[in-house]
Every structure is written in C-alpha cells, then in structure tokens.
Length: 249
Image 1 (tube, rainbow, N blue to C red):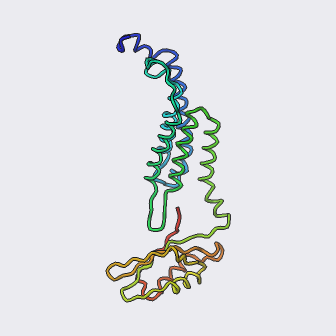
Image 2 (cartoon, rainbow, N blue to C red):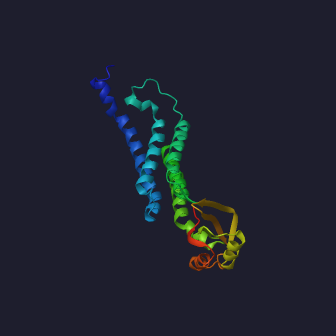
Image 3 (cartoon, rainbow, N blue to C red):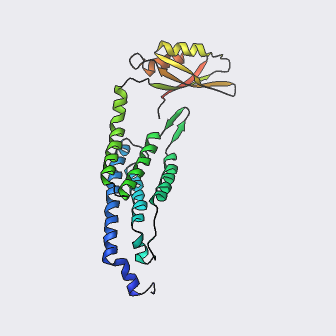
C-alpha cells in the first residue's frame, strides 16, 4: 500500500486508532495532575524544581510507558506484525534519565548538601508516571498522596521527635593564631554542642588558617541559640571571621 495513499493516511484517524489515542490522552492528563500535586509543595517553599518540572517529569514518564502497551497501533497500524514491547526496558531508561535530572538539583556547599529531598521527589514523580502508564491508577494516586504528605508534614514530625540539630561552622584565624581542638570543643560544649572532630577540615591560605567542622547539639532542649554560640566563637583568640549555618540536606 502506498504510504501516501488516502487509505494509508486515513488509518491514522480510524476509530480504533482514535480510541487508543483517547486512552493515552487520559493517562497523560491524569499523570500531569498527579505531578502538579506532588510539585506544589516544592513550589510553595520556593525550590528550583516546582510544579512545572514535576508535571513534565510525571507526564513524560507516563507517555514513555503507556505507548508500549499498544504496539499493534504503532505507525497507524502499518508497522507490520505486532511486536512484543518490553516495558521494563523503557522503565530502566526512564529511571536512568531521571537520575541525571535529580543530580542537577543536588548542591554541595561545604559540608552541607542541599537538594536531596527534591531529587528524591523528582524520582518519585517519574515512578508515579510509570504507574499511570501501566494502568495502576490507584497505586499512582496513593504514591502521590504519600510523597506529598511526607514532604509537607515530614519536617513537622522531625521537629517533634527527639533529634540533634547540627551546625556547619567555619572559623578563620589570623596569621599568628595557634588554634587547638580542645579550646573550640570547650566553647561548643559550654553552649550545648558537641564538636565532631572527625568532620574537621583545615585549610591554609596566605598565612590564614581556616577550620570547617560540624557541631551537633547535645539535646534540642539545652542547645543555646546560634547567636550566643557566635559571640563565644568570635571571642576566641585569633578568630578573624566566622560563619554558622544549619547543616542540613
């Protein structure tokens, strides 16, 4: 049959072909809605990856999965004998591609690592799209609800449970300073923090020594405000500048 004949072109718009397109369209629309729901929390908190990113990831994952279920309708039904499409290979490719996207939102700042939750939730968005594509709609809705609920209420639960807040500390000493670990550890303990000695990194540049380390609170209740700890660190002999920031991921 001539590929440009009226009969060949009409096959792309035949009733069975349109019915399959309708099913795929509904899958894509459902995946988009679930992706937008999952991405709302990230948008609300001003993250780089928001509703658009999650919606596209979820929809694209569903699209790459759902079409494998209709090989007989590929190319308007002119693809020859139906092939046995392997969705698992498509899913492997989706997971690999999303891995690169997730790696792009992870940022390392000194001892701080940010973006892990965003990267994990993007990966979850692709899993939701795959579930929609293979027809597990209830499971996709459940995963969306679980992931959204964990991102929204997980931080509140963490604050209620016993935990040890951590601070990332940077101390820059003058050229004549001779800092010791014990002095810094004593200051940290005085304000309810424990100096994590195995996190200490020392750098020297132009005669100035810079210390980078993590301090863990002994308890959430007894840890002093960061401002109080900063005053004592500033008073350490030889300290020229300092930086305190939450050690989070």
